[in-house]
Image (cartoon, rainbow, N blue to C red):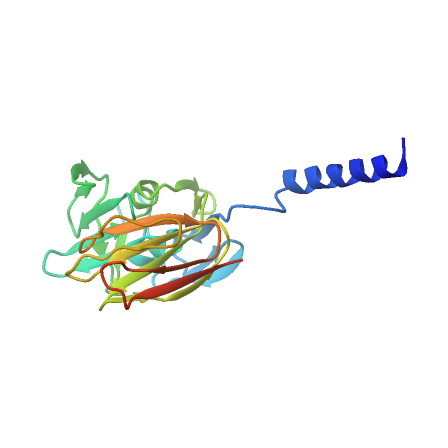
Length: 234
């Protein structure tokens, strides 16, 4: 066997090992660990905090978390309608509507019944059932009773871009390759998201578009030409 052949085989073997170990082209994931009664949490192994602790109300067996906590980590938008006391989670393919004090919810227009109703805690924070919301957004939920710990896992990382006042906000994102980005239209007029090699359909008010980004992208809105944004991928 010649030296050249040995070198080629070594390079091929190294590429195989690196590829198989996940060191190249790894899709980002999200893991959230929280304990009932504690505001300290772990997100992807890094310490973080929530403004109101997860709770299990007296007489119930369901764990609740602050309404925005799950949404922000899983790349979903959460809206609040005070007149209806309604929470809405939005992604490109999910619309989840919950009402304070009610076990009736709505997912993509279909009525569903919850095991436990959302409520407002003593700190004025809206709390929602962690398993229902997480699973509807596509994540899995694990419960460790001895530690009173909930672990939420999602095979992606998510970010949200708001379309508001004819602007993309934030207009610049820097994310790992494979991140799910959701654009949410909060303007009363339609918008869309147009890049060089892909585009969304028209996005109506309080509707969303989600796309997984694998390369750096500049985008604009065909309906309003002065709008623009950029996503840097690392």
